[in-house]
Length: 65
Image (cartoon, rainbow, N blue to C red; front, top):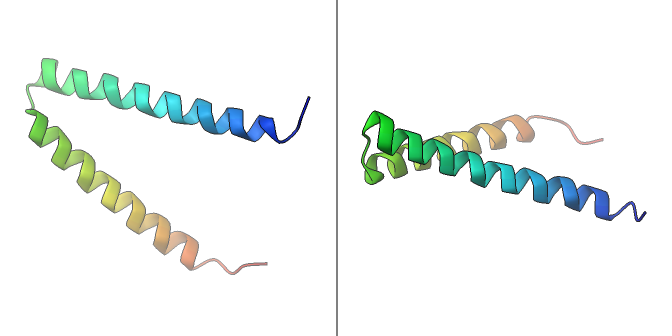
């Protein structure tokens, strides 16, 4: 078993699960809650921007070994 393929499997699995989770959440928010597509898109973009900002702040403050 090639050890370089194991991290790629985890990365691919994480990506597939993230896409599936996003699809289920979008369907639930649209059908059950009643948000429009545009409201869901704006919420997703704001959340992504906040997540990227926090990641930059968190990883920038850590010293590198």
